[in-house]
Length: 224
Image (tube, rainbow, N blue to C red; front, top):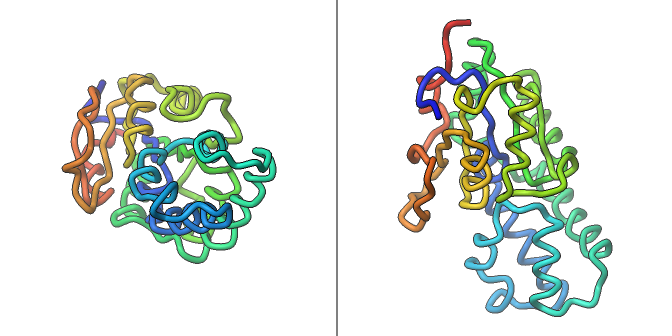
């Protein structure tokens, strides 16, 4: 793994590049309420954050089994994605330092890829709305993989797209599932934690915690 001189940077979306966890929590609680599951039950914060980072299909499968929901996964996914589409683009904001980091990566010729458990349309819509599309060379989403985070597959695919070895890449995540995925692919990983990290588990390969994405600019390769 490398600590400096990264030629590729991979960023998670929700809670990392996008300040969207409150939005996704809102979607989650309303979705659960629509199935008669109160916040004090399945909609609890603990359950939400434990599932964070996984694909919506994985999350919905867990919810369906755990709470005995009779709807099919296809019906659940349609309802869940409708809620996301209604709220994400209007309420999700850019995390501190996000624009500065992406602009620096572009200036230095560092390959930038969003690696997300969301759908491609959500990631693309966010990047376009924030005026960031020109700085991002790739997106790996739930649409592109068979096994989502915490499996290493999403970040292994990002490495393939970048053409760089893991030792020259840097990943940024906010959730344990994402960090396990990135470090499992052999990538040095930083955790975006603007609200603190006291409850974050110890994961080998995690380099540290940041409160603003621009803190990672010194770790990019500048030889371009």
